[in-house]
Length: 265
Image 1 (cartoon, one colour):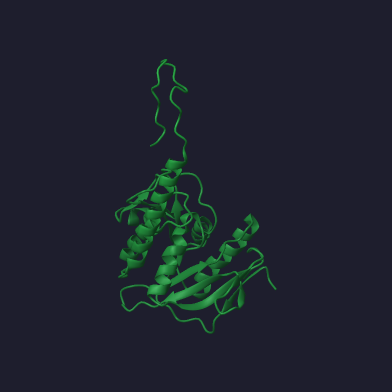
Image 2 (tube, rainbow, N blue to C red):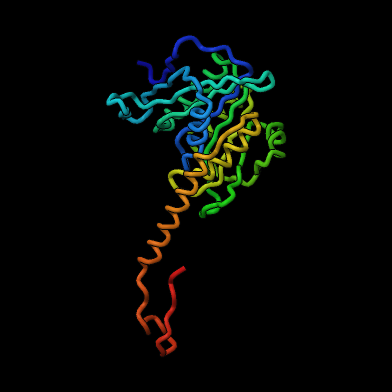
């Protein structure tokens, strides 16, 4: 078995100027939430599965009692309009665990999209932590393969130039390999904290992406999850606040009386 290979689900469909949207596990699960939402809402068809020895040595347990190797999966969403592109979705269970694996897997993803699906533009999705606190109206930050792509998307509500540091994993490497192969691409990052699943940031990215691609989406399920997460965070803050012991009168007080200082925010 090769270290990394792509298994096709039959013959690949002929696609019209396809774009690739990549949403794999990462900060806030932002990209994965977006792509899973698109896959389910539009009933996208699976066309290929990527397996790799660079993925964790795990199998997923299925609802029917079976198992499967962890993997990444390609889906196709055919456009109903002659004016819009067909969409290829990539999501999955994991990313490669090593630098060597990341380079091998992500290079293969770009080659497959470019050479076998005849694609030319790639969106990678992720989360970006900038404030350390929960953003009620998350911004979407962007980094692109060229200044022409930056200028194209600057007027669409994407923030360029404020994101700093590095983009880890597939979200960065895929658009880097796209650039090396003469393709255009952009990484869209929803403003998030380091919570495991950030539906609010995902919704911000999804709405912007849907508008750009001419998709009408239903965000009711995301809205429910946003409310649920907000309630959970509120309850957690209350638990933390009530668990902090109140100082005893006079302790830590240099004024000689019984005044106390409150540590409750």
